[in-house]
Length: 469
Figure 1 (cartoon, one colour):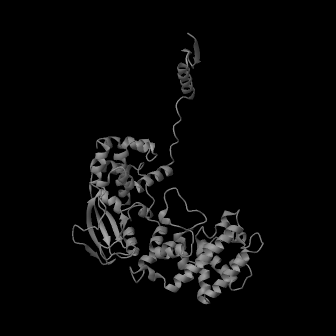
Figure 2 (figure 1 turned 90 degrees about the vertical axis):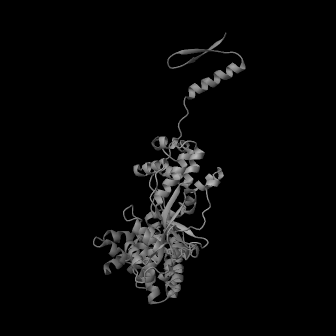
Figure 3 (figure 1 turned 120 degrees about the vertical axis):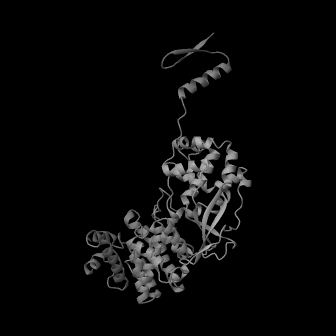
């Protein structure tokens, strides 16, 4: 019989050569030996894995429904407190206690609406949360979460039976994550590794507890029927919501000032985003590892710029503004009262000119210099002080005068100069400011724009304004 030799690293193996079937088998074996093992797929980065897991959690109830678990997912109806509600004179709201199946709870309180509290932990690596998930799978009872019930427009909910109720997590976002991850683990098990949701070592940690639950379908049905209890806060407004969030999370990773400001001024931001068409990056939607696009404006920066415009005050800071919103003498009133109608219209029109017209022109004129190109959308002192200068013109004169001043600025941006706003001089000037840098830089921007607007200088003369300070 004819033979063919295949050399290996240690020996020569003789194989038969003959009919087509044998040849095919030999060729296939040769290819397998030459290729060796298939390369393992590249493991996801921490950010990729967290994002994949988050998306699975966001779509969990839909995925469960499609897989036939509909009978375990009770459609949430109006909640009913298991004991008389307690009134809270601070917020003029009420606090009650609710019990319902986990299947209803994870539909009522959506992960999507609650990213803004703080960036989520890496639950698959955090020792405390891994233990919490494992213990819950084993049958442990979770402590009560704290949930807010609000009207469809974010206002006070007068009765729990009202239609369109929105539920928001005050305290318990990480527990909500843990609930959903536990459901995924008892259902999908080690397949979550293949789905790039969890690392191998996490499955090794959960494996024994998960496998003790038995059949995956039965285990999911049982866990969705587990009783969940939580405190419910209702008849509160957005300021009351923030009050509770700050109060109940002081011992944990703090909610950022940016997020606090965004929650407080949602009506204003809605007007800026929908009426003025300003590209706004919502701090509340930020997730770990993701950054604001440079050309977009942070919601919190626009909140501060708005207040600076109305008060024509360049020295506003996020910390002071966040605390001030909670400490206003009028207390927890309708947030729309923070600005009158005239203010809102002037704010929307002015910030539209700044964030759309002027911002776009600056990006066109400084395409190769990121520091200059994004000087407005990078937020901070420049945007706030510029807005304050605009507010000063409006207050001293009127909106018509301010429109004319901004047209002068646009005319400068259309000049053929390489640096129409003298931003190189601006950078050199602020580099020379050593004492009280923040305060003096804010005043520099404010004074320079005012001097240009009132005709004292024909261009933005940063160096001359600095000499006057």
